[in-house]
Image (tube, rainbow over the protein chains, first blue to last red):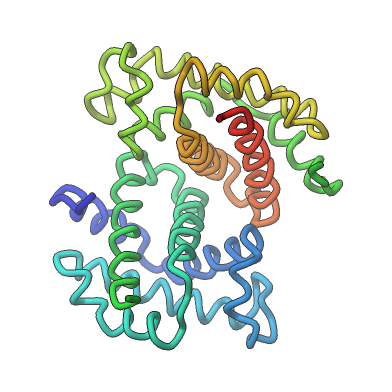
Length: 143
Length: 147
């Protein structure tokens, strides 16, 4: 299910609309994930506070969404563009790749909540494909 | 048996008491057919599903979306016995409709997204968790009679 030229254009345009709200989206997606999928908290046992408004969730949400925003410009070669992040996730963090799908879902929910008019089915399918391709690139070095 | 907290019960009753079945049902099914196009395999007789606009404008999709969403009413009214409540519908989906159960999750995800867009900030993470738990229990019940 590779990204077509149309997918890339739709994702770029929509991400442009997100603009300054990106950090908040990242924070919200993480917060939703920890509450709706509590098993994902096991990767953050070293954090003092995993509640939605906490500094850790805010900061990490920003980190994650920042990397995704950067990936929007690398859609022509996600595997190459995410190579070092893949190393990190494969050899250091060792996050089970099933969780990428879970976080992706929560990003979609956050987008739907914050951009109800813009997150049309056409935008949804292209963003879903983008996040899936990104997740695959992130898991590329796992084995 | 599934344990429901007071919050979860209240949340599910609240969401469905305010549900615009026609609009949400239509949008959820249509979104599913657009985002996961392989789900169109079950709707060969629905006519024009060639692109997103056609799917969104298709009256058969709209009508069926409403039917499917009302199918959830049984679960809303029988939260303590969803498994038994859906035994017949499970047999129907397996023996007659031959629907791959993976599709239930795809539709559930689209329904979650549509409801999230409607409720906005009211769709808090806790409300999301309750709603998704409810849908997961329904999916499990619908999958139960497959063999």
